[in-house]
Amino acid sequence: MQTLNLDPRLLLVLLLFSQLSCFHIVVPVSAKVLMNIDCGSSSPEPYTDKSSLVWVADDQYVKTGETRNVITKDLPPAWDSHVMSTLREFSILKKNCYSLDVDNKSEDSTSVERVLLRASFFYGNYDNKSSPPTFRLQFNGNNWTQVVTSMDRVVYHEVVYSLNSISSTIIVCLGQTNVDNFPFISALEVRSLDSDIYSSYSDPNYPLFFDKRVAFGVSTTVRYPEDSYGRIWNPIDIPSTAKVRNNSTSLEVNIGDRPPDIVMRTSAVNLISSANITLQGKTDFRVPFHINIYFSEVMILSSTQKRSFSVIVNGYFFADKSYQEYGPVIPPYGRALEVRFENVTADPFVGIFKIEIVPTKDSTLPPLINAVENFYIGDKLVQGTNSSDVISLGLLQKSFIQLQDWTGDPCLPSPYTWEWVACDSDTDSPRVIALYLNDLGLIGSLPDFSAMDALQTIDFSNNNLTLAIPEFLGTLPKLDLLNLEGNNFSGEIPCSLLKNSNLKLSVTGNPNLSLNNNTSICKSNIESRIPSASNSQNFI
Image 1 (cartoon, helix red, strand yellow):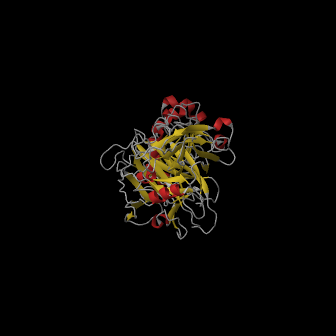
Image 2 (cartoon, helix red, strand yellow):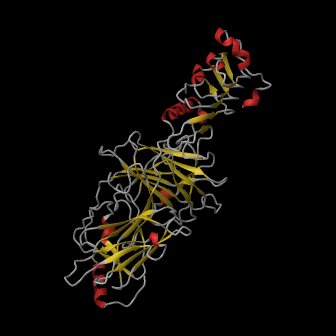
Image 3 (cartoon, one colour):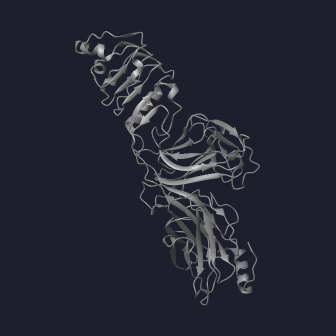
């Protein structure tokens, strides 16, 4: 803050109202805390933080990764040191996932339709490499963001979206982007939102990715329970302004996106009546985004007083096409006002955007502002890999322990498919077209995965698979390569496989497999369909 010369009467008013802090704030309780996951914690008992949030260890939600301890001496005060003192590191698979089932119901049996999901990361030089990693963050098969972690601050990302009516499971995945640059995560939080919160910007099939949420009148970070929806509002000081508290005995915040009372009770008020409030923001967004700006009058105005201003986004700062203006704005007393700007464009090179609060000519009082948040609308939510394929892959995982570490969507987002599958190019609901399960030490018989009828390639070579070759393999309509060599199959080769002239079949190295099929309809094709060991590698 800066100290400037100003009208003594205005200064007296500002100081008077900034001291009125005895008003009771009622926190709404319409939101429900669904999950607080302390990633990397090994404690069998839940932990309750100073905000009465209950945190649980993450081992029931994830199958991979290693727990690591973090020294939290440099942790910002807004974050719980106990929760941030552990993390989970992922150093093996290219994609590692958490599976969170919110059961589509809140504690009072109200249906949960819309959620806020937050993932937090505190590096704290836990690995003594002084090299904070960068990696990808995904949810439910959708790209979320690139996470760029920091040495000494908490990095977090939020997405708001509507749950799928078919499944209430939330899948959060971390994808490795660089060798020896291991993804990690410190905390996961899920909050339910009222169905109309942030709902008017797009239909429910599109997620909202939030960048910044700041409050200009508060001195400390605002989060749960002051914000019952669990949002985080960070305090920001604006030069040449004073923090002034609203003197209304009641404050109605019944507006669309419902900022918390405490944010709307405190404003940053300019110290000079005729001066602008100028905000310059920086965002990682390289796509058009939305800005919500919140206002509330701090005092009852006399008949000779007027507070009126226009809100300008990007003004002359950028090209004409990015200029937007709203006004005049007259902040309401005892109520909240939300002003929205859509499809704002930041500077494409450095990500800068600008907001100006400009007093009108007839305004007798300086402009004020309470809070700002910005977000962008993501691509349409994907349906995910074909459900029949997912079920069949689950049968394979249930049969073979070597496959059980792979979680999340098998195909999406590309290129983070499971290492042993290949998928078609459909970016919404892809099909699995290949299984590469060779040399994995699989033991036992194959389950029926005939529902994967888009399969073109299957390689089970060099395992220890037993019993008969399943008949269903011959029913897969698109299968053109089947490699079963180097196993312990027994019995006869199904006639349906031998009759398929388009199929490249390899069964060598199965000592208990009969090559003399007694089914007369197959006899004429047996010699041509069973390759010898010398040429079996030509088509694999």
